Image (cartoon, rainbow, N blue to C red; front, side, top):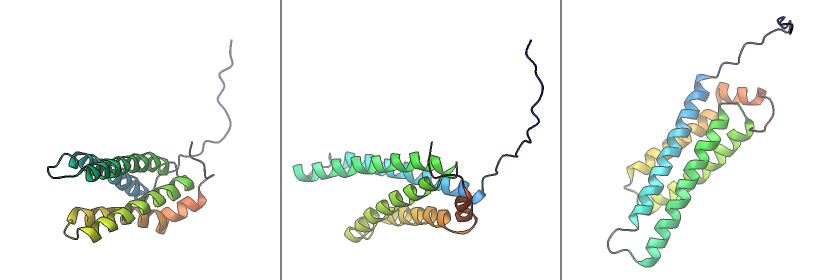
Amino acid sequence: MADHRESTAPLTPPRRRLPELIVAVVLGYLTGIVQILAGIALMFARYLPDTTATERAVFTIVGACTVLLGLFVITIAAGLTRGRRDARVLVTVLLGISIVFDVVTLVSSPDTWSVIVNVVLKAAVVTVLWTGRTARSFARSDGARTG
């Protein structure tokens, strides 16, 4: 029969996730979902009347890229929960790219309030990830690989 003795190795308590990190992850998911919905809306915009063939192609390509960017943000935001430094860098890069697209959109049509909300949301995620206790927890995290 097998011997079922308990291990004498000390148990380490599970690391608690910081509330700021949880907020950043939730905002990351929210940002990704908003990007996916915006990309779908852009792809449907190709069916608006009075759009040329070139405009339809641009709407489709930009919409598809926006959906992909949103999916990447959601995927990488999941890595933030494990405290991985590479996930933090990738989320920052993806949100930075997205902020650049939003600024271009804002310059071309300044009356778009939803773009301003998007920029604020993305900037909040980046700020939370790189300041305070969250930044210190990433500095202490093990390894940089997600997976």
